[in-house]
Image 1 (cartoon, rainbow, N blue to C red):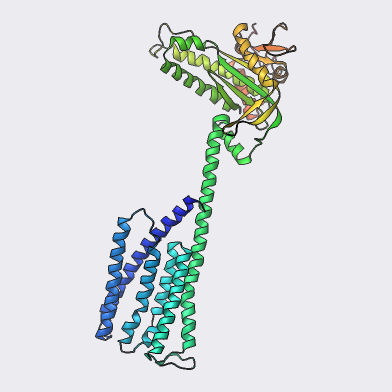
Image 2: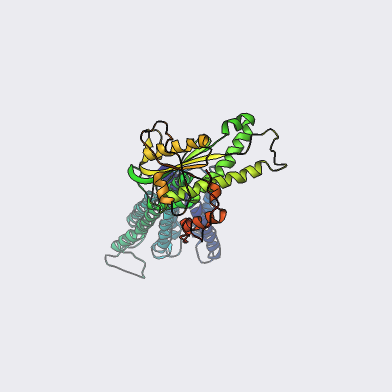
Length: 471
């Protein structure tokens, strides 16, 4: 059992103890009222005992109330055994009043006092402690047996060898069965307490499980977005490593070093936060996985860790919307009264590199720290393509495999075959995408097609006019 569950059960036990104390007070006050009302039909000696019992119950309730207030928030393991002992003992002491009353000790056996024992045994279950319930049952059986033996031994009541009812005598076998069944109510309370403890334990386990899922979803939402993270947490996905066809997107701010040198650190951090807030929202909009931040850039993955339709097109639309978002940020930065300084560097420009191909996806890292990421030639290629934008003065460069996937919808410009990629061998057919060649209306139609399944006309059709393609 976890420490948290144990604390919850202890708190419930103390709450049950306080509830029993209120019931004890009500019972004591009712006993005093009944003793006073019935004073004329009992002997003075019996009345004295009845009044003393009621007064002791009320006094005990007051004392326990002070103890509980002084120890608020603390667990008192002894309380349940002390109060059960007191309650069961007080009921058995009724024999002292019965012995002094008109009918004698037979009143103790044939009146409502055995029912009161059943009540206190059942109330032991409010402590949520199986041990306390078993103690109540055992103590009831022991004290009842001792009292029966004492009454018979002292000859306070006639004993009949046969079962007898309605006369001033008892049969030992009948009374023994009475003791067993009265005490059995404590066993019933133990069963109820056990069920309650299991329910509390199960509820806590489910609560802990839900909390763990929420924490996992919160962590994943930083990479996948809220809705996708909820799907992943619910359905699960492979973290151990798998080969996947994926599309990789790298982006970077072109003039960030100059900007950071010309502005203070606070303004730079604020700008980056505003920038990344926009960029990450776009990645998540198209179902991308935010793999990592890279200084003033980021890496996003599509079709990993789960399958996605039109992954290359999702990546390209993400890059196009990023360019549009940066243009909007530039308008805000240069708006009059918005804090843009006269000597502030020029507008932000970003470059994006997109490549598609086979990757290895999974949890990668050390025993102390791991993260979900992808590795492979497509990742390296996308990173190299992103850096080309600086020299080529382009915004988006994509690989041949990506071009084949998006060609029906996105206009592209072939790049010279003489371009070499640093650190990579072989020839690569590369293509540039001019964001101005994709109108806002066309971008919206393609977004609806990808996200909502709405058909969009192919690139170049009369239904999808485009602006001029520039090199």
